[in-house]
Image (cartoon, rainbow, N blue to C red; front, side, top):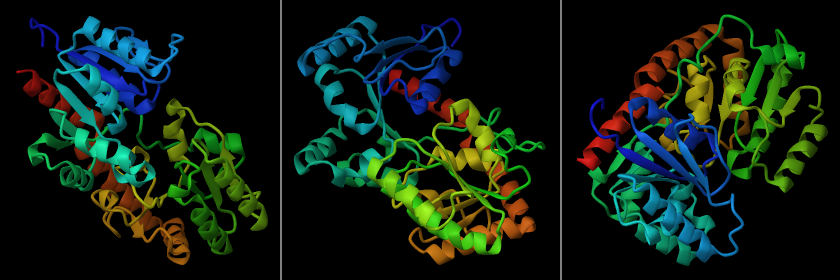
Length: 367
């Protein structure tokens, strides 16, 4: 883009969320003029990214917030406004009439039953307004097309993308294992939120069966975005099953520590009821941790049972336990899965590959 006017993109969403940080933070190095308007706090971006937060000034009403949003878009005059998460379409479409891109995150489409019928109808109607929608799976793309009745070519499957310079295997044992005093022990990891959707209870029940065959195994959980009642249920179950010494719950793992977290695992378990393409799955695959996943359509676009992971019914405790044990005990199978996944991630799931595709789409929209 040297010698040409920079394309100006304004991203709107949760500015302090790592998904938006990584996406918006990538494009300055491709020569774009990038700004972020956040409905939450400020995030971590390259210095040249201009940030604005609707939470940073004491606005007393929703109407004033919308006026500030409209003012910012008028001031920035972007070529493209790119909303992250479908729920932000409502405020944005009230103040912006220019080129609009939406990236659906998965739960905003798959979990519409959690909002009122009126809000659901309004959101479905707004899905027809963006000039382009991106999402991270063919299944999610089909769902969006079904709901909105828009043309298939308006929905593009673009992955968030794995930074394969950061998320990669290591010949050394993960430092987190030494810090937790579990060096040399087999580790099962779950990187998902403490919410009923992610079936953490079922994972713990399955792990209880795992330790009958692999007594020194450890289950490493990462707690965030928790439902307080569900969190209490998890803690009570761990005590009741006598697993307090073998289930370790980390309250926070920073993004820059996640590669080490994945490398600590001999098996990664992710068995939600619904899902898009979880970054935790792709990042763990990139770090050489074999996955056991639930039979969700979007996830099965990435994991073929017995080839590069194991696919189970998320509510079948016995089958889940057997799958975990098989990967812990069969190193030949596990190593084969690791090899398959490293090739897959580099060719189809890397951040460089997907953001370059997104760059071409931005240029098409502007031209």
